[in-house]
Structure formats: C-alpha cells, structure tokens
Amino acid sequence: MKAFLFDLNGTMIHDMEYHTRAWQHLFNNDLGGRFTWDEVKPQMYGKNQEVLVRMFGPDRFTAEEMDYWAVEKEKRYQQEFLPHLALLPGLQDFLERAHQAGIPMAIGSAAIPFNIDFVLDNLNIRHYFSAIVSADDVLLSKPHPETFLKAAEQLVVAPADCLVFEDVPKGVEAALNAGMKAVVLTTTHQEAEFAHLPNVLHFAPDFTDAYMQALV
Image (cartoon, rainbow, N blue to C red; front, side, top):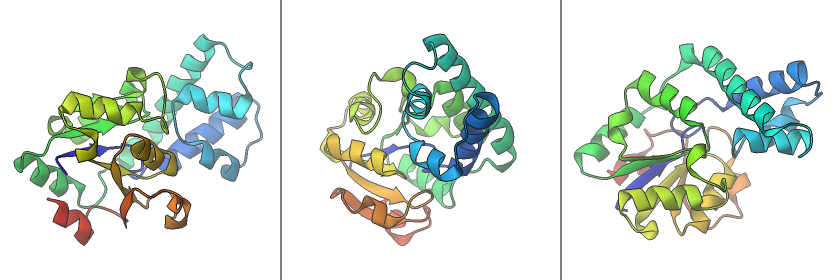
C-alpha cells in the first residue's frame, strides 16, 4: 500500500466508551431521553447531528440546536477523557516508522475539527498527517466513501493504493465503497460484526500486532 488512512476515535485512541457515556448522559439528563447503553452504542458513527436525528427523529431539533448539542457533547467528552488521552499501544512507533519510510498518511474521521485538534495537538502528532478530512469537510458521512476518497485525493494517491485503519463496521463499509482494503482495530466491535465485509485484511487489538509491524 502507498498510503495509510486512519479513522480517529476507537482507531488511534481507545475512547469510544467515553463518547458513548457523554452521549448517554446528554440524551437522558439534558434532552429527556431514557436510552440504555446498548441502545446508544450502535449509534456511535457519523456526524453528531446525524446521531441526534437517529435518536430523536428529524423534527426534534433546529439546525442551530443540533450544532449546539454537538459541540456541548464534545466538551463533556474531552473534559472526562483528557486524563486518559493516549495513542493505542504501538501507534506512536508505527507513525514514526511510516513517516520515516515516506508513506503519506491522512485522517478520515466523522469527528468535528474541535475533536480532531484535541487529539492531534495534545499528543503532538499533527506533523505525521499530510491531510485531514473531518465531518465539516464532507456532505455524506460513512458508510458513504466521501471521507476516504477525499483523503486519498488530498494525498494524490489512488484509492486502491490506500489502506484504511478502522474500528467500526460502518467505517470499514466506507472503505469498501471507496475501493480500499481495511485493517480493523478490535477496540469497539467484535470480529464477527465485520463478517459481511470482504475488504478486511486483518484484525488486531493495537499496533504492536505482528501484522501491523510488517506493514512498515
């Protein structure tokens, strides 16, 4: 592969529990919902506004209200997760070796820039990435391929030459729709949940895995 494309949450950092917790608290304590953890967890993909529509329907919020709650949720998530913020084991070394090898890398995430900046700047890893595609940069979220196709375009690399690192089925489906292979980090979902996706090359708990090491 000529380029690496990374999802962010759950792929580079192990934080999906904190996102789910922040959403559940907001849904139930601020917005009057009664959602269980198991009801909230499967909805943790796409733009924040899309999550709100999936949970409460299309007529509950104005666009301005959705924008407000989207940012409010991230503020709460960041406050709680910051003491635990760290790359997945082995990823710092993986990024450095890929960088030294001249492999272009990009982030393709449904997170808003506010959240991406939180990770890149607190961990001082922004210099590894030649392109960043956020929720603000696309019209259609994963599983639509727009996120990964834009990242490949910005890197000037053909989609078929890009390897995607993901942690959720909808993200791997987006890679499939973009004509890309994927490696799955099993931080959030079990291998069986990806059985319908033919583009998965490997499953790994983190970047210390021997397969990951062999990529660079």
